[in-house]
Image (cartoon, rainbow, N blue to C red; front, side, top):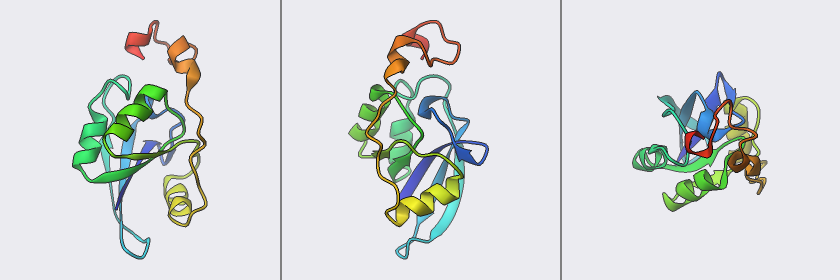
Length: 128
């Protein structure tokens, strides 16, 4: 199994589409982390980039993220990636907690994303 994590520094980025990079963890049968690699985050919105397809091609089946808009959630789900929102903290700690059933999806999407309030300086939805 492979898990992708939206990352900034060594912690989970609060907004999937604006993270610094994605940490990709390969998980063994015994829930041990076998390998860790990173891939850069494409510029722009997570729902409009090709990141979901890239992650699917890498064999990723789970995305651990702080939050994301409904568009990004839909795109990831369409690429057979289970999304767990509401994560925060150190990447490896959160991944371990997920593997041992201590984390579940918050069920909350970034609703203000479409209303320009959390667009990180962008002036319109097209740039978000």
